[in-house]
Amino acid sequence: ITGPSGVSGGAETAAVPGGPENSAASAIPTIRWDEPPEGPVLVLLDQTRLPGEETELVCTDAPALVQAIRTLAVRGAPVLGIAGAYGVALAAARGFDVDEAAEALAAARPTAVNLAYGVRRAQAAYRGAVAGGAGQRDAASAALAAARALHQEDAEASARMAVHGLALLDELLPGGGHRVLTHCNTGALVSGGEGTAFAVALTAHRAGRLRRLWVDETRPLLQGARLTAYEAARNGMPYTLLTDNAAGSLFAAGEVDAVLIGADRIAADGSVANKVGSYPLAVLARYHHVPFVVVAPVTTVDPETPDGASIEVEQRASHEVTEVTAPFVPVAGAGVEAGGGIPVAPLGTQAYNPAFDVTPPELVTAIVTEEGVVSPVTAEALAELCARSRQV
Ligand code: MRU
Image (tube, rainbow, N blue to C red; front, side):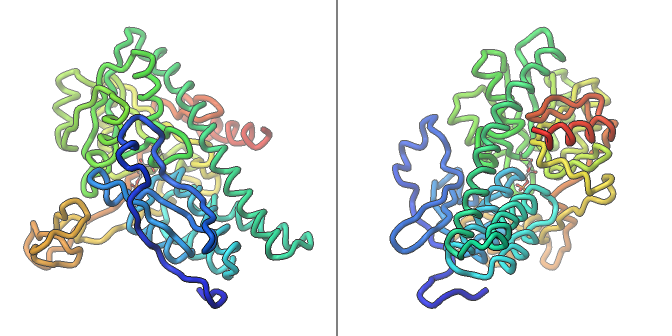
């Protein structure tokens, strides 16, 4: 990608301003657009450094953002959409080739449909403005307005999902005192608001109805241990971390009332792609007669993907499994392997490392969206939900 002379590319890092204050229950600065004198930038909270460091990653062009997406500095379906839209706006505002940037951004990760949705929405706004005779500056403003609108809509969707989700929990579990198991990270770090599944648990906590949040560590990249535990601690929630393998015995002991997870893509038939390890939880939940609830904005439902088999599941590098890094920050003096970590498997070991798995609709008790709850999960009910959402 080329730009006008004088535009610097890449990403820079900086400590989050007022870092210590951010450890209070204030909003997490997941993503923001900024316009310093040197030119517009997209500022991300670098999720690879959490929970040890709250560090900002400043992206000045789309390739830097693509790299941030691939390395999971920014991750989670809804915020990937927001980031993708801002990435297009950034390319436009900096005078880069917008279509080229859009293609690179949309292809940065394949599974979360929100990423391509956000990119295409900002790209369409830019193209529409150009087609309407707007100059470069006004077309860039149109792309930025689209990104900002998506950011705001996602915050509103998060709040509405939380209300619908808690009402559903109360209906499914009339005794109150919910003990909820969650997987991966679905809070403010993935959202314009407080998240998807995590936002439901947080709302239950604020209402005095969350007895325990069980947090799967989420191998291999530890989104549960590093990120969900970080968010739960900041919010003063009663939480306990477990290895993914410990979930079975927790169900068997009768300690789980409901599973709440997010989604990266929901196919037209209701199949749910989410962080690898979600499907085994759905099987466990069914065996133990525990509700398995998916919380996701309507933008995660993809009518163009007919079924679970059609969902492209991202395969990630072996070294994420064959090495441990202390977490993601290179360890001084450690033997440097492909990922810069300490090998825990014989050198040359190949790993099976899908980032996601797919849960069939018959194992999903309900899908909670900002437009309401789908239960039972059927293609017809999802199509009706999408049609209703398009009319709003
Ligand atoms: O690989 P990640 O960390 O981007 O995976 C994220 C997840 O699987 C989340 O559970 C999903 O995006 C839902 S977030 C609301």
